[in-house]
Image (tube, rainbow, N blue to C red; front, side, top):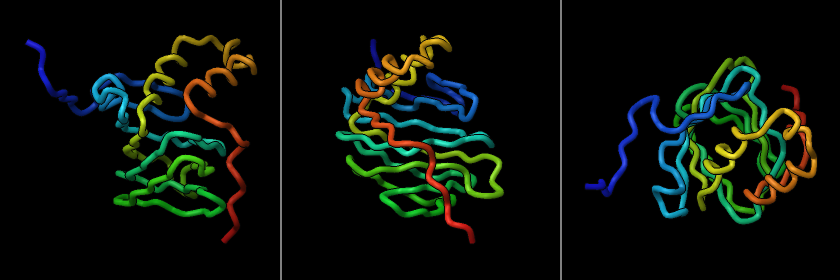
Length: 157
């Protein structure tokens, strides 16, 4: 008999270990009928997510460990453990680790779902695919990712 719920243990769920982060899918698009995806993201020392936005989906971040610097709609802010940040569709944002932070861990909710499918599709790609600008543009468009540039410079002090 199929269960009507899902249980994912610590360290469980489909996971994607990239050079800058290690992401675990805790609740997938398939689990929610496409309504949302919940992921745990373990940020490594070199983590940087460039400036981008999403036209039709929102992101919510809840910081569990470490300190993350977010650039949202022109503002820089530092998110420490216990901080929750919700970014509606159409708002440009980027993030990196805060100065002096060597790693962080956060929960992310994507609504509607889809980012888990984006990561799964990227695992099938070759290095040449990642260099193919037309292919990457099509992949970003498919998953509502609008790249806008690198992480903006943070003000000093």
